[in-house]
Length: 333
Image (cartoon, helix red, strand yellow):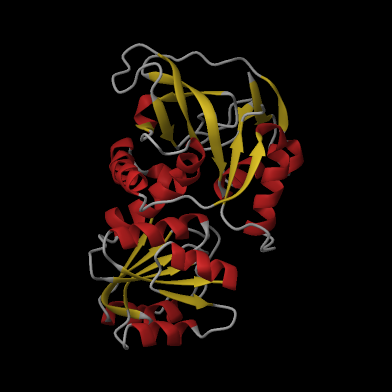
């Protein structure tokens, strides 16, 4: 089979595209014919060697996928040949990735692909959607009628947070960096959109909440200013952080406990299969109902994985602003 893989960590130029053996499903495993995969910032960090994880050699890149079950191994109970599926958690913790014509994965990391949902959209929503759901409902227990602030409403996780919060009946404030992104955030359901380059974010939050503050602050970028965050929180508010491994912001202890606030952190790939499957159940329902949509910015064939990684890093690390939405990769035709 054709695959995009690495034999050593490094810059995007270490990625190779070529032939590797087609995997055979073992006990409890499913072989998926990949129709679409997605690229996430964590994929570039693993490829660069910035996150220490066991890597087989050669190592196929990619976490997310959607496609059709080609074969099943012994004792597989949830799926059979011909089922359409989507999932995440590949390319992590020693598992082979998804940038290949075929991917072998444990059935516990796969979910049914609803009728009418495109493979490209499911793949684009996989990791970011599960992450958003975990932060909103497993960590902060967001309720209908509450107000949430999403820092970065058109990023991969941010756009999923906005839509899921609206699906749950919450009011959403979010930041963007351009008029184009503001239109996208409103289309996804944001009630208040703030351009952080031209507007005063703190004043906008204060005005929208009439001085009360937000119930949930969902931080999708490395936190730098907890004073600003805690000033914007309502009493008993909850703060989520899920980015910035090297970030060491000053922590205003007094404001934190006087307001009875809570701070939650997590990484998606440390959550159990059962915890993640609960996310997928809601995601499937919302995708079917049209309440959860993917924002795809660029599609590459697997043979252009190097270019895809460069584009992701240009925007994640370089802040070039040349990408709006997720990068999706598909098999070469």
